[in-house]
Image 1 (cartoon, helix red, strand yellow):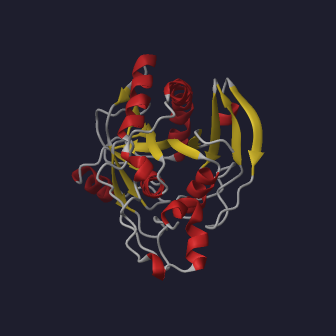
Image 2 (image 1 turned 90 degrees about the vertical axis):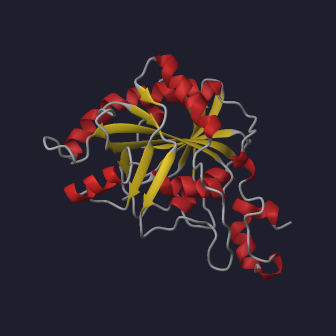
Length: 286
């Protein structure tokens, strides 16, 4: 597959969007297992796009059991160098109303039972993660939303909880007090793995509700789905516009995120580990 393929991770709908020309559905096996579903390859305008439904088509996988490592590795193996992620979230701020879009710039990770690194089982790396999204790509996404006149917040902190249950009221207030703007269950894990894979990453967060911190509000699936229908159209417009604006040139730090980060002595890295890590970090073993 050609490099500079643009990756999009999200829920159902993108491959049916206006202007998306389906080319093929590709099954990709990785050293980290099977991704959530076949990857849908097509053209959106003048650009090649690889779409991956995070939860699998039909929403089969809970946030805690998604094989995030296989998802990101599969996209990397296809040549993806930049990813736009779309995620439904709850709002923890009065000013971020249901229906608003937020271009996430920070994460607080409160997950506890999922693999969030490629580097384990005999190899260690410590990447820089102070700025967890690609600021260059995020700026293009925000400018696209602004150009379209869609109500979008330029920045926001996304607290990633384990799930799959929604927050208790006590937790919702705790998350607010931690300084988070949004609550979700997936994107911090993705962002960590994408950085290790040296791929650029930006999240379009779709506010669907006020979680349960407001006295007159509580989150439920029916309300989320109703708001999502309204949000999806706007998100698709932003994705289309962003993809046309995206540059193939990556002059950001994402492309070399592993440089100097692998701590394990090369002589101590087994052939099995080298083989497993080849799609992610093979150039650093040569």
